[in-house]
Image (cartoon, rainbow, N blue to C red; front, top):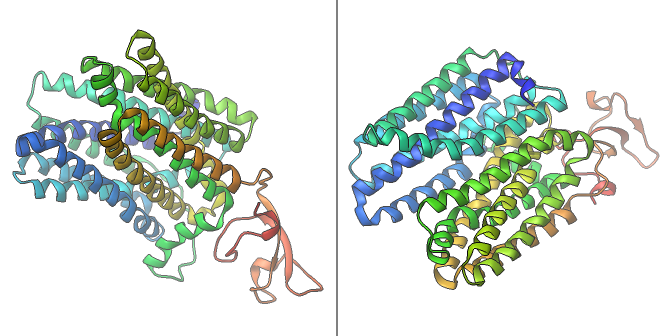
Length: 451
């Protein structure tokens, strides 16, 4: 897997991603302390609103950013977003009102919503070989998991010698380092695209791509399954650990660490597994495993607390991490198969936006159910949602899903360049076959192969 780091361009981009993630992790800890300084006992409400603003920024901004990525040089866009994030992080220690926190959080997350899909769409151009790209996806998953473990530890170490305001300085340094690394990378020139529509029309193209492509509709359902299981982990772990098991605060980190360990181990194993079997064979069973694990969590949280149930909870959290990683990591491969090179930014932006819309649904659901109905009911409800999403994904994703499809054109005039290898049919129109994606010449999936 690490062999892809021999590529200088990818090595610089991956390092940029890693240092930016560390900076974001430091900012998360510092923002919690800042909210407490400003709002005191109302800090939880401030942070909850800030997280909601983050998700809204992701959902709203990413599609527009995907359209802009096709018009602005990608390196310039990523560097501009890194510099924007650095400026926001540098400003945060000086705010003294809640509304200022909300405004700066929106700007910070809007910049991230523009940076991340553009970064993701660049990697397939840098690593065109399927095996290398799969390794890169696994490394990216590892970077996210390691950040969730490393950043809090680094923040705790720094807070032992400096005040929390300096964490924002560390965040700024991380984003500046990311910008410098992106500048130093020589990016391949993306495929040219015909621009016949405005930015907002092109922003909507990514959503239309998902709606029209069976495997991408399935991917969205899979994202919902992951969000249902993940919301239980990220929102309710503290209540499960402190209120049900009556364990100390450090046990919260242990439980979240079990989730991260499961995710990282799976990310390490996936490249070899995906070299032998298809994405559908890996992703669908992993999705169906998630509701099964949540059913076990329902029983665990309904049973009396003890050493056995505590060990079972840690195992369940590790399995949720493993299942989530097995679903999320190959997602980039599906996007690469389902969009032309010129449309990759729009595809990644749509996936970024739509997947976070799933989290925007499940985060408050996990919190409200835990507060009003208890942990067993919460796990059962989220498990039911994950099961429905997994069933939907299986129904939406055809078992036979080839890249090349025979199809008929009735909407292109004779002599159109795209029809160069097509033959006329007796019933009218032109028939040929090739790697099929939704684009400017193909507006709907061929009926015979849609499932």
